[in-house]
Image (cartoon, rainbow, N blue to C red):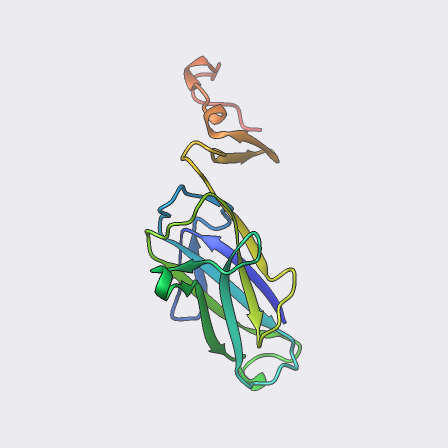
Length: 178
């Protein structure tokens, strides 16, 4: 099995089974309480994977590996989801094409996490691999680690991306085509 985990602002699955996502790929969020977000888990199974169901567990852990728990101390519950999934029958896909399962977990706004690094960890039938993890950071304050935009393969703070077009020499009729 191969597992890919994505963090996104929101996600859904359309009627054809395709995953749609907005704000895909963030690694820094917060500060708490957190805005709504979604965790996408894509499980790809080898072609010969049986059609028997398998358990997918998604758990939120601290950087120490301890489970994140929420609720009153007397009744605290780990932040986790367990679902039974299965791959499509081999008769419903071309020979040589692997199958898989898509899982989307939408988190409501208001989750309170202390500043620090956390990980979403996936296990399948009780087994996990190092690559089946997605770390992220919760800011202590809003201006900590400000967002960046990619430009020509380099990252620069958003404030450096502003271009004053009035200072540019643009010929009448627009720029020359390149």
